[in-house]
Image (cartoon, protein in one colour):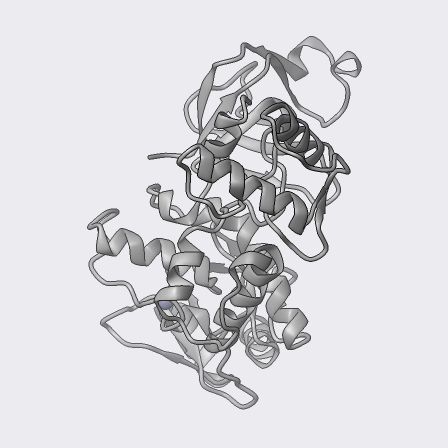
Amino acid sequence: MTLMLKIVENTVLKQKPVSSSQLSAEDKHSLQRGTELELHSLDRLQEEKFYIRVSLAKESFQGKNTWYAFTPHVQVIPSMVKEVQSCSTEIVKGLDRQIIAEMNSIVPGILVSFDDLNVNLGPAVWPYLQPPAKRALERAIASAGDKMTITSAYRTIAQQQILYNHYKSRRCNITLAARPSRSNHQSGLALDTPYPSFWGKHLYKYGWRWLGPGDPVHFDYKGSGRRDIRSLSVRAFQRLWNKYNLNDKIAEDGAYGSQTAIRLNNSPIEGFGITIGEFRVLRLSQPYMQGEDVRKVQNALVKAGLTVEIDGFYGPGTVAIVKQFQQQKGLTSDGVVGPATLGKLGF
Ligand SMILES: [Zn+2]
């Protein structure tokens, strides 16, 4: 399965996230409900609540293949880590952002971006390193006096899970992938560059070491100030999961076992609590999810003959009623409102 944008209401794709009356004809494109477009990638912007930026894999409209889509009118498929079959891990960036933020909230400043250095980054690269590794990289780049191309640096536990799934399913020509939390790219101390013979001597001076001919593009930082953060990435995910799944809490022990693997695979690629389409996936979280989508679900439950307060908060009372509804309809009674439950509610 590839990443698809499904149009659920007649809509207009836009070059800027503004009302379509403010845009000229070449900066907008109308699409009919039911249209499906294959995406190369999508990006959610911090400051834009109602738009996602999508880059189309096949079509272009008015000669452009990057557009803003109005989220209440669209749905992005797949939505869970375990459903990802595309070979690029770029599509999990929304969840990645939340995991990195959570790691930095547990240990402030443990991962820093190096996109301010003189580097050329591929689209799926997360430019994060531990601070001593970044400082050493900065010196190596200055010593070379050249721009450095980097094709891989930090890999989140979600990206590693996707690669591991590909490996298990023999997809994407991946012949070997470490279990999540085991990869050296999850250390914040690793990078790949396609020009190792040029960069090797500069990196070497500042504590970076070439892995060797078995993986010729790979370097690890072996200098001072390193920390092992691989269990931190697991703990960050566990904490994130628990914040959004109060009725399905797991141990925050930093150990990647089957309980964590199941939750990671069931996590939304766009991140928790984010609207893609008209409805978020509703879960019991802290603070409670609140909004018009919750209100609509509560209304539908009342119409289905159940008793629930229509207050727009997805709290324990509503969850209990949702579980009751799910049981009546033969669904998994987990209190999480996703596509199957929405369907039974008539949406
Ligand atoms: Zn590598």
